[in-house]
Image (cartoon, rainbow, N blue to C red; front, side, top):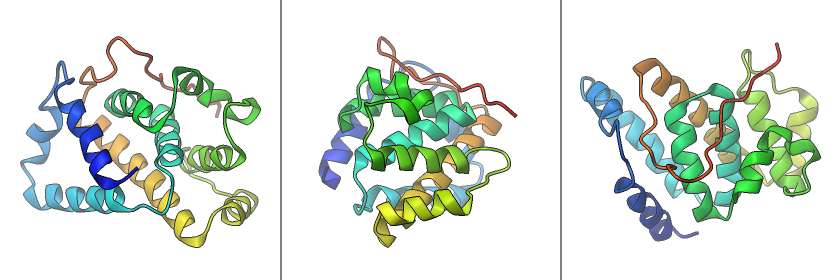
Length: 181
């Protein structure tokens, strides 16, 4: 998906926000330097195009459901359709290893997101080696950056009290995963 298509997809979401529209901006406006830094990183990931958007979105959704950020789950669930991710795949994310709905590369990306999103984050040598073997170096770096950023964004939103905005109202929305210790 080209950057103009990404922009259209995100712009279409703005009108779908039903509530809590200003949760994040009310907080982040207090520290303009941080807002600029966050925006710069977002733009860098947004413009990066080494990795398929569907794959990055699956990894981001997995991350947001593991962290439990209601805003992130709402937004990502709504954006999923723009990248060809249907309700069946969203429902299957918690059991991705056994699901025939995901390709092997998608399963590896989701597994990496799973490992990076736990506390503590433990990406063992086996997972890293399998992911590195399946992706180019540039794709690997982009995937790790995407998942790390989603971890940051989700934890920031939770701490600041950013709530769901209703992007996915009327459609399926992923729910927080209950993690075993």
